[in-house]
Length: 256
Length: 171
Image 1 (cartoon, chains in turn green, yellow):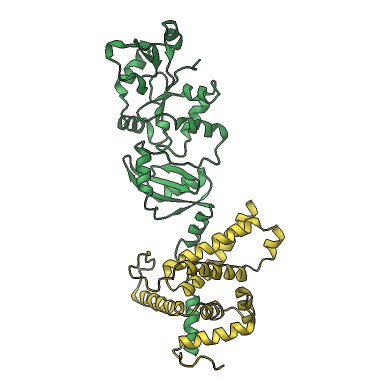
Image 2: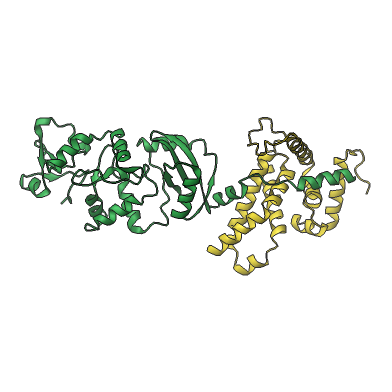
């Protein structure tokens, strides 16, 4: 009698495994989970919760990522074994085959608008800061767009690297400096050399003679044209006066 | 609501070990135990979100969580029988420490598996009374049964655990 009861008491002294409370809080949406993933960009720390991916960073260590997240995002963070399918989903997202969901709570509505718009830029293409500003209805807020992108909590996933200055300068990059930005763009198939040659010559748009449509130089819809059929423009006005209309896909100017 | 989240966070930290131990004793293996314990807290979280503040204040947290955990296990058992032996042992072995730690863990696991073999009504009564150390009155409240029924079930459950499973009727 006595031994059974003593044994049962010991069963009651069992402790929950390490990290149990944090996992519960994560499931209740009160803490984010994170893990480190090997990606085409190297190891990337990724945090997520019920609403989607909430942060990504190429941190040097778990400690660095955790302290950055707590300070910047302001929620608790738990390291977990990632769900079996998440690594593949992340790979697909970075390769442009899928669109994950993102948790952008805590950002201003302006920043959210900037980041949502940035998500629309296709892989292999770039847009100027002013394009984002105009598309979200704040054409004068070019600098604010730059700030919002510099504070993008989910670089790589939300492709702020696809936004560059209209004079062709690659610009700074929160996800690892201008070199990292160039590397990622090259990885995505942007012909940076050509792009910067055009920018240095002052050309911002390219048109196709046969269709009379002008685009941003990286737009997919000009690429099939033969080299001799392509014309360059310094400005929208120049394109308009030559009888061209803006492309409906990359929208280099407000489509009338 | 901010208040609910604070209450819940404290609830989890204060009761995590108790709820986990309960889940382990009721399910018999650590894998299911973690599932049940997590489920218990998540149900508690959803319920808290709907409770008015004075109800949350007056809540007897311990008894309440026990009741939820017992219900979680009952509902699971309706779907799938708990697996009594974890053959692949794929849960992370967190204390890969000294040997007697491993020994103690194995003993505990074996005991939990034995308790989990009891019929549900005996198992619930025995676990709440002797593993969780609730009073008969508290057990009766958590299970929604009369005290006399609980006492009888505890008695019979212990008898089976001691291996005196011959006569079932003498009291």
